Length: 217
Image 1: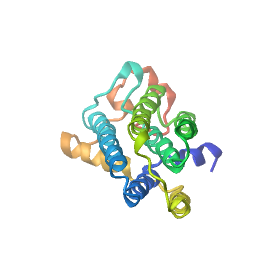
Image 2: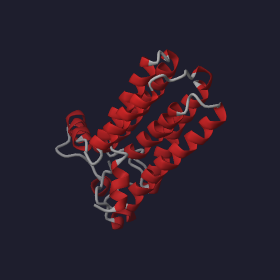
Image 3: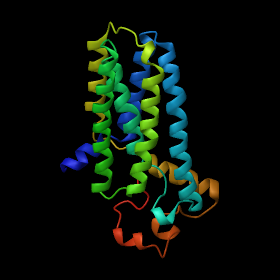
Image 4: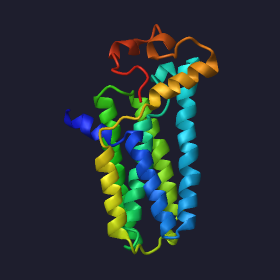
């Protein structure tokens, strides 16, 4: 396994959805009700946008051929939403200026995951950029809205240990997300097979890029 594959595995939903669940559970355990509510109200619709875009392309071939865009990169979107938020939550006991630095460090790590999707030819530039924008909006908005609601964490070591164990335990796992979405798209559209870049855009110059995965993940 090369270094970029190791990096990209940190963005798989098999890892990030459990981390997101632990993060929300941590907030609820600390009785930070408003922080958890804001996070869920931002995160769940974002997941719906990513899912909707994938269904639209796989089921009906709806995308933007000129931009080689089939929908926001799921790995990038989730990473941008989760890692900066997690970083800010970890340093919540520190002064607000530290929150900005924590968010930036989390964002840079998520950006590295986005870059890995390009290096591994899993997504186009437009899809990664869309993922960066969408996920950043979630973590940045949550950080801004919950800045005054941060609570002292009395279980920092235990909660951090749980997050680390979840990440180490699930790193390298791959959720069957794409195949499941493809099956849903087929069922909804009535097509015999799902669209991919090559069947949706048969004359596109992007065929020459030879994506390892013509859908992205």
